[in-house]
Image (cartoon, rainbow, N blue to C red):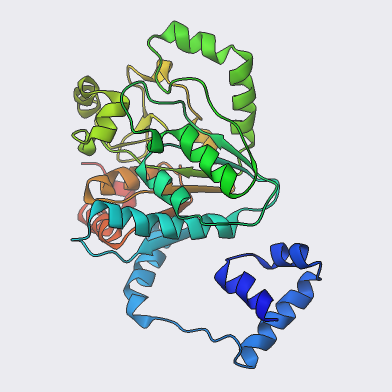
Length: 319
């Protein structure tokens, strides 16, 4: 029984996964877990100091009709790397909990997604397929943040299958994008996008245009266009307003990535993002319905609620 408790509580395996691993009926697993709690073998404690974050999570879930919200306790003066590590750990735990055999799991690019994969640890082999949801960078970007790197590392951890993408997220011109969309390789990738069951995506914000990561992906000259178009955020290189309405930019017809509307059809579309500069971008993504789950920090979540209240609620978020 101790082994079952370890697998369930320490390795975050589901009862179905344990039953398959040990060749035991799932009902028996549930019964043994209950017995161990009753006999004191397993003790469950609740840290009520975290009740504030629980309230924030519930409020965001109710406001936006989300399946799940995880607000990560994180001191404001922590380093960026420390925040990303905490964020990635919570996102990794969520991913391990929600994936099932035969899932097709898609990733976007960025530091939050890279941190998530770094925190996955070791996992039991599962019948999964990991795929990129967006093309690669056209500028300078650290390789660890590249979508192909993230997808490959995740597949190695789960000893699962993966596919890589050979196209840039933003092509040099519209004709190149059209040629890519007509290629056999893209059609295969598109089939995977149409079948994605779990998506993990970062949320970008023009407010971070000064960051080397953002500049490396889009270039400095694009910022002014976004500002004039009232863009507040992007997911997979598709841009939107604070109300979640998609914005057609000079890059739209040159973009190679999953459609935002397709994200709405996944079982889980998880946004993994933090920082005060991204608060409004996350709100825009939630208003658009592109996410049904969110992992963020306490600081970011509190600012989101303040911004919502400041603007009179989610239905009147116009500036």
